[in-house]
Length: 135
Figure 1 (tube, rainbow, N blue to C red):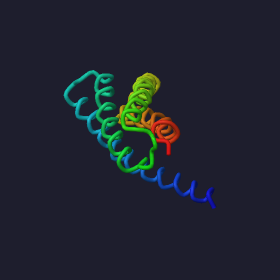
Figure 2: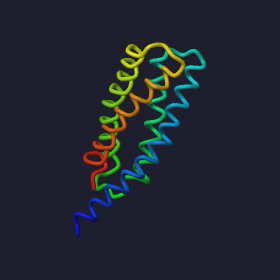
Figure 3: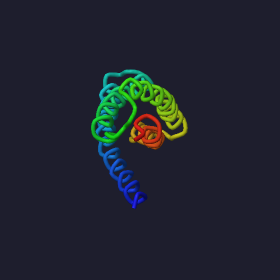
Figure 4: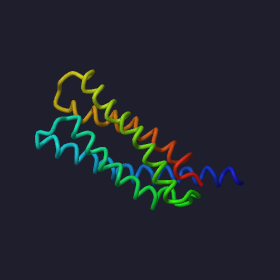
């Protein structure tokens, strides 16, 4: 019975994480696109958009996704900052790598962003659930 409850809790967290993540991805991509429209260097635009999406993610995940966490707010903030510093470099690096590997085409920046975002999202869910906001 505990296994079913644990599985149910995981599914609920995953659904909430995906919903919160979708919203934060919109914040990230919207910021990225707006900054690119201003002529900002692509890597600076990606870095700033990641920070905007990440800040939104912390507050929403803490409030809605991982509500049963046992660690204190200071521990959560520290763990979150360490995790997202790591995924910052993964995300920006993957975006840069994809822009190098992809041929030039109209959706080149969107595809690079999506690949980088997908990789960072997978890392974040596992680490947020098992380390930062563990129950």
